[in-house]
Image 1 (tube, helix red, strand yellow):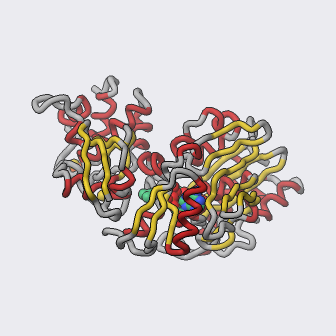
Image 2: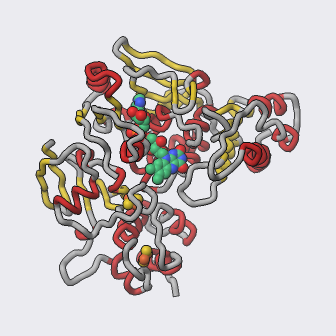
Image 3: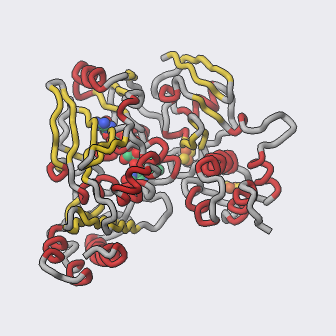
Length: 155
Length: 275
Ligand SMILES: Cc1cc2nc3c(=O)[nH]c(=O)nc-3n(C[C@H](O)[C@H](O)[C@H](O)COP(=O)(O)OP(=O)(O)OC[C@H]3O[C@@H](n4cnc5c(N)ncnc54)[C@H](O)[C@@H]3O)c2cc1C
Ligand code: FES
Ligand code: FES
């Protein structure tokens, strides 16, 4: 089936099988391999992207469901090739990643969280990221990175 | 995990969706948020040959004030329930329970209609809608019918909807300023409830329902009768597991679930000041 999706601001028209999951469309068809597959069972959030600005697990959505919608992946966040998005920068500054596997999904979920709640409490950040698992960091510095990005003092 | 191959059709109206379902028979399934159906298709527990996507039927995402009740379009997603000013003031228990479903990503996609039609006894929203009462509107080839919430959940993942019907609207009573509480017991963030209890006062009566204590969401009628007869929260809660047949799974035995139902019911009644 022919779909037309705006991905990171650019219109993409593609022929996909209806059963193609959005994450595999992004990775295999469009070559946007920043979005990871962790669990493939809707649990870990590594595949989180934005659909019309809201965080979504792209392993649990069909590419055909994104027809006519706007999708943003981790590749579409940074303003330019040599400047990080403030959330990416904050993850770097606050050591919010170790192996980095969960990071694209974490960053996308965190941006969606701050869109909905620009100045969350620590508890709200922890709850807001409950759909994203990290096997390395113990979450502490991820939470710190998100709070710092929202302009709150984390020193 | 990739679903088995299927044909995909988009419906722009409820009428179109119903016509497509009629055309393709029981091989076809409606697709709303896809957050129950797609995981099942990936596991090949569901193998529909046609999916009829109703997400584009956008006049079904409303949450409207209809004087004596609130009408919610079947496609309203969990996030919109959670953040609805109307629900927060007129039926806060529903907004709160919606905020306890899964995680933010799930709440951005999953719909109230999908959750009710799926009729999972472990789900949060069916149980709270059952506690509130009210009715559901189903549209089929011969028009609309209204189904009382009390008659809707008929079995394990089964509802009163027939295969050629689509759920279009959920009508719930207003319960402003009343006491309410929801207890969801689970061991991991974002999980389904091992047991859950919703308690809400509707027009002076305390209505209590149970999550994951049988093949459907259940009203705790023993608890309700005890409260109506003047029992305290702690006394009434003793009846929470009466007449239930709780499932066994990796998380809990029936005995443990019965224990949880009693404890969580007492907590819900006490914390909500419902009695
Ligand atoms: C990781 C994860 C965690 C979750 N955690 C929870 C949780 O804690 N608590 C909870 O309650 N739920 C949970 N869910 C389920 C979630 O709430 C689902 O979104 C919801 O149960 C189904 O809604 P949907 O719109 O996604 O339906 P879909 O998956 O699109 O459809 C589900 C079923 O209902 C049918 N259907 C859909 N809409 C209609 C309609 N209007 N009329 C008739 N039939 C219809 C479909 O044909 C299908 O059979 C979770 C899901 C995931 C993926
Ligand atoms: S890969 Fe999608 S949630 Fe884990
Ligand atoms: S940094 Fe390794 S999984 Fe999160």
